Amino acid sequence: MKKPARRILPALLATVLAGAAAPGAGAASFSNVVVFGDSLSDAGYYRPFLASLGLPSTVVATLGRFTTNPGPVWSELVSQHYGVTAAPSNASGWIFAQGGARVAADSASTPPGGAQRPVSTQVTEYLARNGGAADPGALHTVWAGANDLFQNFTLFAGGAISQTELQNNVLAAAAAEVQQVGRLYAAGARYVMVFALPDIGATPQFASLGATSAGGATLLSAGYNTTLFTGLASAGLHAIPVDTFSLLSEIRANPGLYGFTNISAIACGPFPPITTSGNSQFCSSANLVQAGAENSYLFADGVHPTTGAHRIIADFAQSLVDGPTAYSMLGEVPLRTRAGHVQTLSDGLAMAEASPDRFHAFASWTGGNFEVASSGTDAGFDSDNRNVSVGLTMRASDAVIVGVALGHGTSDGRFGGDLGGFRTSENTASVFFGAKSGGFYANGAASISNVDFSDTRRAIPLGPALRVAQSSPSGSNGSASLSAGYDLRLGKLSVGPLVSWTSQNVDIGGFDETGAGSANLRIGAQTRRSEVVSAGLRASWDLGPVTPYARITVDKERQDGERLVTASPLSLVSGNTYQIPAYQADSSWGTAMVGVRGAVTDTLSWSVNYAKVTGRSGVTEDYVTGTLAVRF
Image (tube, rainbow, N blue to C red):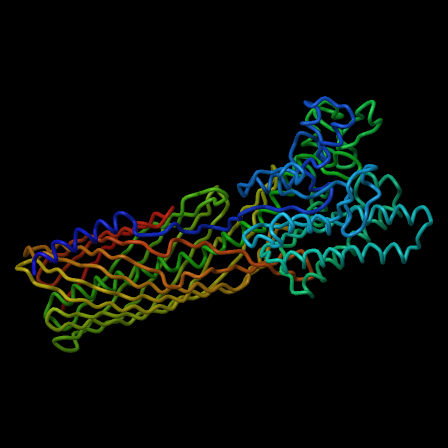
């Protein structure tokens, strides 16, 4: 019987230390970023047209965007953030947006002879390139409608259409955008980000027309957004809504916070002989009205944002994805604090089993760390977790011990990149038992706790500004665990196989953020289910005064399906909700524990052990437990 034990233990240890796990999934990541829209998202679609004007190739390479070139637009920044090479679609990229594009109609803004590519055509091009399907793992974005408003406003100002027709035409464009978003979902898209129109009445171009025209453009912008977002909600399209209307209004209310010194004039000067006034498509550092205007001015020309403004828009859009992902960690930390509490029960039970006395009281402390390394767009996460438990065991018979315990767990969780964090506090009540007959044994425990979160904050960088959203979630955790095995006695050495099952149900109630303006989110209720099955070996060596012991298991999470976190921007009265994948670690890993227990006096005993989780990609997790027990 000695040979199998000698063969199995080294083999299992090698498996654990090698990390018997497949690569895991971290926070939200996307296979691609696909962009549809107009000049607000155009990454250089018109560079071939600029070359046809006879401009030097070195100049053409730095122009083409509708901003303060060569600075990137938001679509490029978001693409790069998610690891996608940013390029216009006519340069083999995935940014289909074209300056001047309308939602579903031809545009008067397209250069003569240029291709008419409204968003409806852009979507068709994308689906044709992608075999008729939308990539379900990609982030798709749509920002359109401004040119529909511009051109209908021009028709109205010229007397070609009535005010009623103006309003109807603009709202029809919003309804058409809902249809294009629906096409993407019907083709298989899962993540579609839809941008609101900014307050067009507040742009330099419309402000120069007077209060009446500017106010009318503001109302049309708001009406477009209402139709767009209520239409998406009514159609059951859970797009990620980007409220740029509210965002840019907040920037105008406090421009200095975002690094802007001028929000009414334009940053771009003329580009003779092609333009005699500021035009963002022909704007670079060579013809800015002053040095640094790409960051200190809000507008590049009459309607287009500067590089600094695009950076803020990109940060804002990314926060709508990164926020729900970060909050998914609220469901992960209670799993770790509960694991620490259950270990204290196991230690208290083991010390009671080593004594014939009927009653034992024990006190335990567990401290551990759970860390997810930063990777790609993932900022990472780190938490320090602690648990204090007191319990009482009673020997019900020679073979059975039962017990009760109370525990108090706390944790300090930190989002990577100084992006906030949270603290938890939970009070746990447990019942547990141990049964043994010969070499066979079985243990079990059931626990329930409240989980209160405090100091919950999410930092949201917006260019040079930093907003901090605060919230007060709460939840609960119910768990049950069973383990069984057989200890083979080999003199003073005891070794044998074990199997275990642990189930946890963490429920986090929905909550609202405050303090971050248009970046505030409503986070829906979360459920984190965990069911871990484990198999391995345990061994102990009775040396008289002390008993060293060890345990090695390979572990498998059976609840390894995708988990989603629901969110909704609080600034939108339409209540649009969307879902982002939660953090998900590898579903297979290994755990190794070493420890020692002994006695101080005839009535006082102690135990100390260290456990480490290995084989989970990007995850560091370990904990130390110390226990004192008194028999009476």
